[in-house]
Image 1 (cartoon, helix red, strand yellow):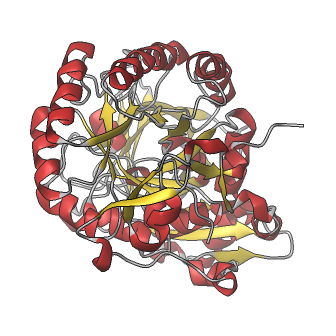
Image 2: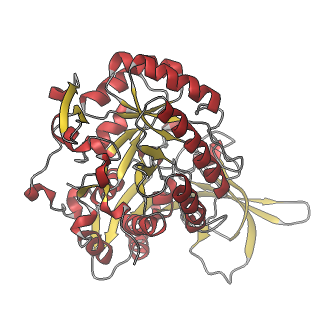
Image 3: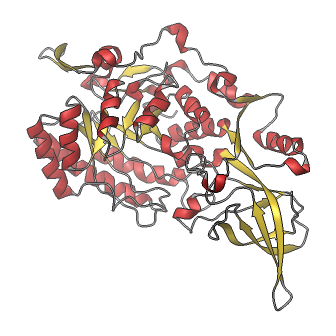
Length: 484
């Protein structure tokens, strides 16, 4: 099992979830034991158990003989009879593998903790677990989902600042002790349920240009942070770091830079109070495709100098992030069926096509409900040399607002034709509703033979827990490797 942690005292937690501290001579001494130590899951694995499972065991179809995910999509389309066509999704795990390598190329110091809420398919979690990623979970159900894939508790951060008491309790039972907070009530709650928790203070940060903004919901101001640090000290709680999230679908790299500087200020305040600050969590919001706005590498190019300046190598601070969209957005392609076609003729004899699809805003396109600025781009399988018509794409429910695209240009389609949509991996399958009795589009998880080989042949040291300097921290070697 490929284990890492960004937390102090990880190695002993791996066995009994005990709380330790270094003695005067640097040796570990027993201090106190978590009340949940005897009940947590065992995460230590033998060498034999560290072998990669085969794709089928992960619920993934291995594409052989050079077949790509695009080839597989066309093969699936041909399997349907005209009167049996239903929307379906092809999820390419190979795309996730390449995103992971791209992440470590651009941000080698930052360990990715995948945001499970973005796409919680088993195949996605399993693939990222095989790659040695950590996981950002928002609830006990997400924690259990990740643990059930064999991921050690030390690779999970409970990154919900406002948690249910039962969730905190169950997380502790399973050895998940690292969690975020941003208010007094959460501190009191944690002190009563799991006083040995390792807390990460979430500070306010916001990118006004982000598609989904969190500034009004989560995050403590600098003044509130001072108060919360003092309160945590009085309660005898352990604060180990700072986190922030500038918002999903960020468009402005400078928002991260500003938040990194603010985090450094809070680190300084916390250290003055005697807290041992070991973790910086820079959140998520990174772009998942290169179509519009700054590319991921442009974000990384701005973040790296700020991180090196405020949290340099050798400072004893581990840096993590919570990417979701970055990893999965481009991995999924949706193919929807046109169930009904209507033709509207305007006064100037202009024809407008209205197509009703078997997936919509209450299904895979639900992101459009929350932000109308999200642009969906249907792609027709008909030739580009055919005449184009102004078109409208509607979803299947009875809600008049179930309109996927209010205007676009398409060749004339017929009932039973297919339209496909790329970049459908983020906040789609995990937010599907059953409104109107409609069921989720069937999803096929696949990986190409070459990509599976890449996953299998990753160097063993990229998946092995290794100590980093004298701080007691551990991170994956893949997050420390210098590019040659």
